[in-house]
Image 1 (cartoon, rainbow, N blue to C red):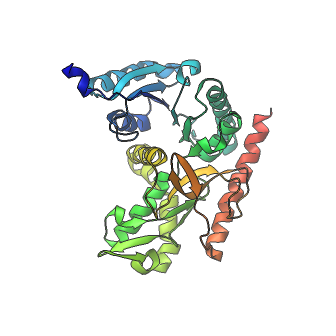
Image 2: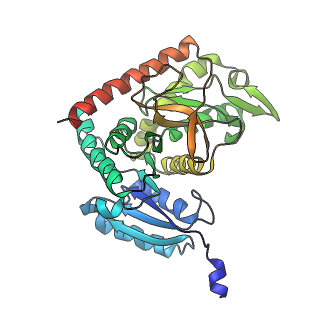
Image 3: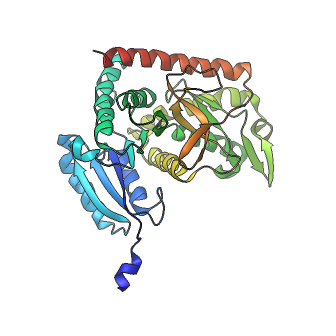
Length: 341
């Protein structure tokens, strides 16, 4: 009887992580299993999908998760089979994708990933709950997400998103460091567009809490040329800078951003705050082409996101928002030509 009381009585949710033997997953799985993402009293069944050659490594990850002795982690299921991996999911975090190899054309990369995300979208369609929330992390994330969504027509488009929270956190942190304040003193930065080097980190609507008073970011930073120049390129190129330094791509920070994204989707954003999330552009009020997954400022309530409307957009921002949209349209059209083959 005593033992029983320690258990959460809630039904476990099924959470899939793909690319589960990789380095982002290695930084991510502990946080999910510990309750940092879906709640401190939400038991979890973790489904870990990877390709067959990675299964031995995956067994090691499973051992470590068992050895963490986490009370919320009810079951861990390692697999290379989609019918098991995608069954009855509440959440799917699609980290695995074909990485760009040296000398690889972007088009070849796109083609390989269209095949992967078509398969995974079809598996979501066939096996997952219709209420599943899907986060695509594997690059090119926006286009991979669009392909997965199109391959799962009976799952609402609103249930698909891609990760731009890492870029959002990078922008937030840059502004905070510049102002000498903690990161949570900066709110409402925006990442517009593609999770690529054309993304537009926008602080025209951001606020910084300086000595207890909320000030516009431009007033707090007091350096317009930095905000319109190096700040933007630093955020845009941060991933490459990490690879250059570590010889590996961002894993710890990517995992943290995935946790932030999913936790906000589950529990909502704070009043007066919006977060950046790559979502379906249909019906947006910012003149962005409809049939894209594009990063917008969103607020979230009851597990539903809404694009934050009505922000004034100046000419500087407009040009950058349109440039990243143009890249996404080109990516989409190339991907769709592969999809129909």
